[in-house]
View 1 (cartoon, rainbow, N blue to C red):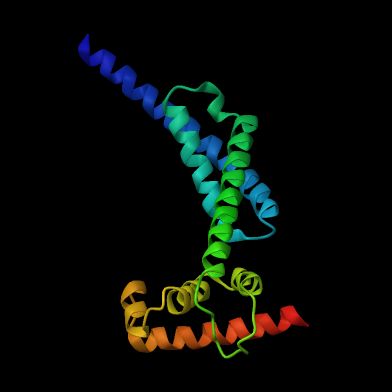
View 2 (spheres, rainbow, N blue to C red; view 1 turned 120 degrees about the horizontal axis):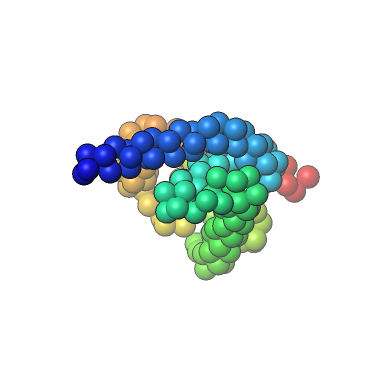
Length: 178
């Protein structure tokens, strides 16, 4: 009798996994398209949020929540993940703005008369890798060697990245002023 109980449980687990796979196959593209539109075409963020959504769905399905494998529930989870994402971005931007208000001046080949709000706005427009090295260099005041160690790159690669980041900063700032 004990063997029969185990095999029924095993069959149920396999059936629920198959159900989840079928549901995921149908629902993932819908959720992804929604998130791409909601993130203004940011495919990488949409992929991350889609993954977070289905991780939450799988946890709920395993916990026995029957509604977890319905589109309305999944779209609700996706909306919550999207809101959480924008809240994180907003917190990061506020923290960055506060940091730059009290930070040493960023001198990346520009004149010395600049305001921190403008700097933060330009940094927001840069790709995250450039933003990171500029913050490490000019806010944290790390040397190129320290930055290389922090980001796990060679010194030459880090100097190259810093150079590209400074160029992108100057170009973006100039475009913003035009």
